[in-house]
Amino acid sequence: MLKPRQLLVATLVLCTAWSTKAQTVEKIIWLQSKTPPFHLPRTTEYPFAGLCDELLNQLITNMPGIEHEKLLLPQKRIHRYMNEGEKVCFPCMIHRNKDTHTAKLSIPTAVYPPFALITTVDKRDQLTQVHGQPINLASLFADDSFTYGQVAARRFSGELQTLLQQTAHSRPAVLSYRADGESGAIAEMLQHDIIDYTLDYPYMARYFAKKYGNIRALETNLTQDLVRGAVGCSASAADGFAEQAISAINKALNQDVLENTNYVLSQRFWLAPYFTDFDAVYKTHVLKATDEQPPSTQDP
Image (cartoon, rainbow, N blue to C red; front, side):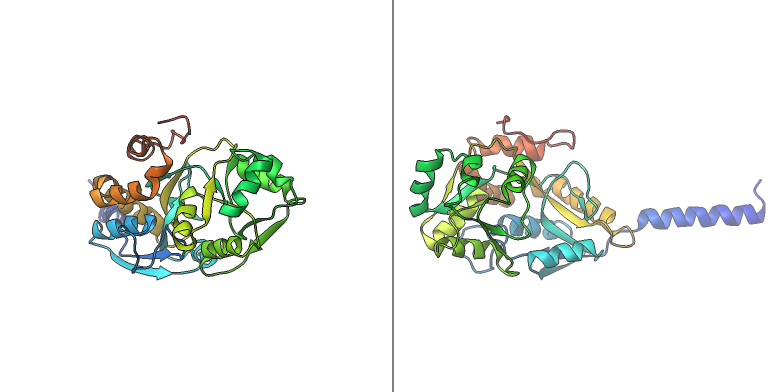
């Protein structure tokens, strides 16, 4: 039989364990950026919200017990909020098999096509005549008659980032440090012949072609894996915020969001033109995805 002191200690331990287990996130501040078509203005001519806007709308709908607040910020400030441990989540991150020091990540939410070379109609013919079709990136990067442009903070993955770093010293380039409307700044540089090409997802070209008319995406010769999206919550936030938030987010994703009709239609609208069978790719890399299964262009 437990003595009174032992009984008191046991009771305190049980109460502490119960309160920790029962602790749940009460509020999520959702960060958004001006990066169409991931995030779009509320007034838009498109039949669907932005790629990450629709995801966020569905998550908020399916997490009614949590208070939600949206905060629109430049991309660099989003990184600062995440790194400084604010109790925030960003619905538009790249999925990785392991969490990073910045963010705890959700299960996959989307699958994106490989990066493409984006240029204008006038420059397209010049580029393909010299560097082939698909574009030979190593050859293009060594050609100082064409100028590359990108957002200063932009990073790619794998072989593409390595190739960019290896040619940085000899490749003419213009970096945009604009804090607001980063992707729009690059499109404007293309329009005004400040740069000749950039690298981005092909649906970015589709979005800006609707605005400017003469933006186009070209396939490159570089073999690239598909990229998956995820929700990320600040890993350094206090009180176990990231773990609690991601647990609730994953539950909503699994129970409804990923197979929600509006969400799937939104994904299909923006991404289907870049896959032979988008529904098969979405099923393989999102609905049936596991952390042990890296995305590959060899899948459907």
